[in-house]
View 1 (cartoon, rainbow, N blue to C red):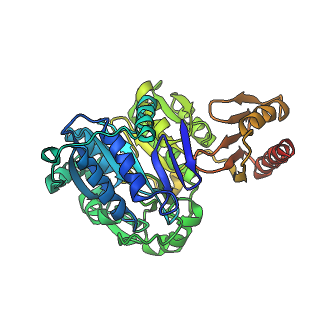
View 2 (cartoon, rainbow, N blue to C red):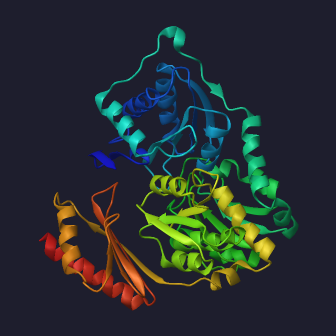
View 3 (cartoon, one colour):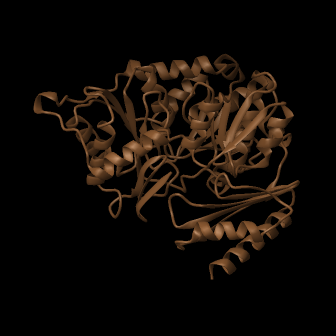
Length: 458
């Protein structure tokens, strides 16, 4: 479900997102936080955390003021990763949380992401209630006696997160392996906690872009082009892996020990192949409708069941909870396991290192054992008010030999690959993904779909 007010400001399953200034303003942030607070019980405790983007402090002040003005008891967590927020909110009985982060978005963008009491994203019903309150400006206001001063997050509370991580992972095996790891934290929230992570797991961590300055040194979206800058130092340093994160640690890209920058599409199947060894055959796994078929092959190899749903972290997490899946992830580099209602880069990194340590197989060899496909990703400008009608027409004309799924846009499946066409929820464009065994086939299908779309649009 998506509602868009302007090109530079949108609200949807992941909350409010926009370009700071033209779209996302302190006033908009105040109203959104007030709508969120109006859904809480009076005096409800709310955790606020942010990444270190230059606009985050401004938005943090607006959010805290608005929450306090509605009578919430605000705990200011300062710089926190997405995974920390997902863990801390339910662990300490918060009524909800507000994460301020641009995540994988480019510089100039930011977002307010509301979290429910269990640390998960809002489900569809809560989203609708939140949007109604926001648009109707039906906000609760506290009397002066009901406005509480905000409190800082106690260090003992954050300590429980690190204890959870150490208990969830085989930290002894990881420490015994004495790994050297290269980590690129994009000067984001992970940079503020990288040293603690390394100390807890006994890592020799070589950090780059590890100053939480708010300045993005690269494209924050983990993918081969943002992984490439560290590829040349992996082998000389003897590193077991290179780990590349977005600014809130909800996505992770990987560089192998041989210096190969891996597609973000491989992060989930790489971790999944190891995680599924813990569970009996028949376990459920969740992903979105346009992630790589490598996931299908890994799940099939373990005799498990794969469920596919709509694109978006909130949708994937909601589906994981409703199906009882043991793991969930997307081709964007997001992975989680049962028990964590969100994506946590430190957990992803720990699972990857645990797989190397316990299997005693280098990362490059584990990657080589995965089925590999060729994928083409394109973005097509689309401003037509008849876009959904055009998609229906394209379905009828594209290929009558393919199996078609319209769960989220259109997906055409052939024995050797798939093609996905989906309208973006954050910008006026059509997202095209074509995957096949050969790059030529993937490109040819993408070319055919693009030509047909342009003909139908003219």
